[in-house]
Image 1 (cartoon, rainbow, N blue to C red):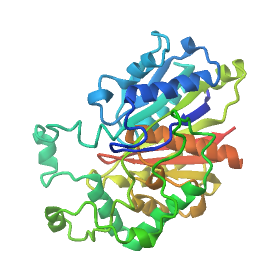
Image 2 (cartoon, rainbow, N blue to C red):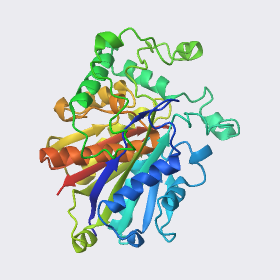
Image 3 (spheres, rainbow, N blue to C red):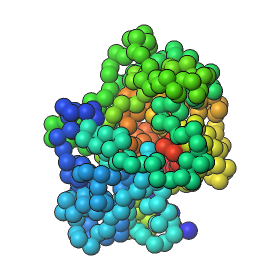
Image 4 (cartoon, helix red, strand yellow):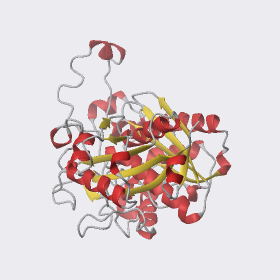
Length: 384
C-alpha cells in the first residue's frame, strides 16, 4: 500500500466570528484561496500535478455555497484542470477531507491532494443553512419523537453523566487560554494582511473570572425533559464562534521524494464512528478505541493528542476515559482559546498536531473530533 504523507500544514489566524472580527470582512472563497495558493507557492509546486482539493465546510449557504472547494481553486489561480469537492461531516468536515485525501493516495488513485477547510461564522452563523430542516422527515421524527437537541444541551448532558462541576469546566477553559497564550504558532500561521495572531485567545483568563458567566443554553422545556442537567456550560467554557481557514498538503511518499520535499508525518490509521445523536459529542471515546485497536498503537505510545474543545465537558469526559498524561492533551491550548471555525477545525487541529510533534520530536500523534448528529473522527499520525 502506498504511504500518504503530510508535506505541509498551515492555517490562518483565528478571527472572532462576529461582525468586526479581524477576518469578518473577507469573502470565504478568497480566504480559502489565499491558503491554497500559499501552500503551493511555499514549495514551488507545479499546480497541474494536484489531483484534487477536498474542503470541509459546514454552513454551505450564501457565500459558502455551490462547492466552495472548486470556487477557491479557481480564485487561487490554480489550473482549471484541478478539481475540488466540499465535504460536510459537521465539525469534523476537514478532518474527513484529510482522511479521504490520504486514503485516495494510499489506494493509488491520487499522488497529490490538498485537504482543507473554511468557515466564516461572522457572516455564516450556525443555523443559516437549516431553513426547513427537521420538518419533512416523518421517519426521523418517528425514531426521535421527543426531538433532537443542540450541541450545547449535549455538552450539558455529558457534564452531568461524567460528574463534571462548574469549576472543573472553568478551570479547564482557563488552562486552554493559558497554554495558547504561551504557545508559539509562528510555524503554522499564515498572516492575512497584517493580521497574524489568534484573536480568540484571552491572556490572563482565570477560572474565577469565568465563574460569573451564566448558562448559555438554558431552556425550560429541556430542563423538564432532562432534570439531571445542572446548567454548567457557559460561553466561557465553550468554543467561540470563529472565522478561519486551514490546509494540508498530502502526497504519496514516492512523489514527495521525487520532488525533493521533506515529509513531516505519515498517516498511520483512521476511524470514524456514529454515536447517540442526543448525547451527540461522545463519539470521540469509541473512535479513540477503534483507531488504537486498528493501529496496534498503545495509549502510552502517544506523544501528543488533540481533542477538539468544542466544550470543556467533552475534553474532560475523554480524559476521564483514557489514562494519559494530561499535559500531552491539547498542549498548545484548544478550541476554547483558539476558536472553532467549524469546517476548518479538522485541518486546523491537524496543523497544530503536526507542528507540535515536529517541535518536540514526538513520534505518534492522535486527533479526535466530536461532530454534530452524533459522530466522531480519529486520526493517528506518525512523525517522520
